[in-house]
Image (cartoon, rainbow, N blue to C red; front, side):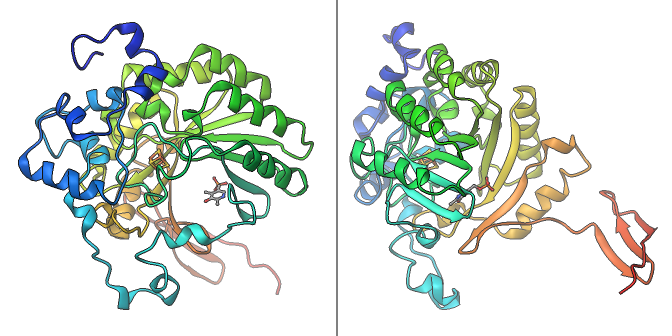
Length: 377
Ligand SMILES: *Cc1c(COP(=O)(O)O)cnc(C)c1O
Ligand code: SF4
């Protein structure tokens, strides 16, 4: 797919071209989409606070003339990012001291090694890059996004590897960022090969949005390289059916052919995917691309992204209307991140109980009394 004339196919299909030609300025943006004067003002004011970058590929998915296009809303700055609409007094004290500076959740699990987040006993997040191909306006790390060097430096990465090597309880390593796939294959192979020398590391996971925002990144060479380090799992971040394009499907296909299971972590976003219809279409398209919906994140409480947040009821309504109404494994686990970690949110199907029985309901709200075993106390 070519957005503007004069770009060679071989360039368009090259991730390094996509990255080097990512749009970071207002002038560049105007070549791809139509911008109103209001949006122009917003662009400049928001730009003073948050970083902006979009790949030509991701821009090509947007409706040029529709400011409420679901892809556009995820990547083009909006004046609402400057609203500080938190009702601070109503927040728990934990949040009160933190809101306004960053996402409070990111304090949790921080270690002496700044690239390692260790919140759960057996697994760590390992940030190996700071850059993203496209910056999501809803990113829960938006204050950090784009800061620092393009790649976490070598000494820091080595300290991260040492942290993992010293702790036999770590069996699962999640490579994250930024987006780890904004770095070259050599850098990624270095990390993978070093991790594979650590006996207790069982699985390695890659968290990347490149299949969605820069699918050209998933080259055959990259897939040939990572298959040497199995078991590797990969989770990506599709939020809207319009993102499931032939290019994205090709990227997924290559990963699957290399034996890498591909999962999806969506964020529930107001005005983008907060209806049953859109979410159902998304999960169905993902299944057809053989991507397994994994998590649906409730949008975090983050400065500059409050306009994306929905109520919990909206998320519960969506899950209620997926479970039983579609393929079981099309239904992601809805989660909210709290200072205690990820917490699953599920509609109740066990709606009552008594001595020797339970009362269940099904997806159509028909109820059923089922015998339960009375265990001796
Ligand atoms: C989400 C997350 C993980 C991984 O959680 P899973 O439920 O195993 O996918 C690990 N560490 C941190 C800090 C996380 O936020
Ligand atoms: S790709 Fe991930 S880390 Fe990067 S801006 Fe988007 S949500 Fe944030």
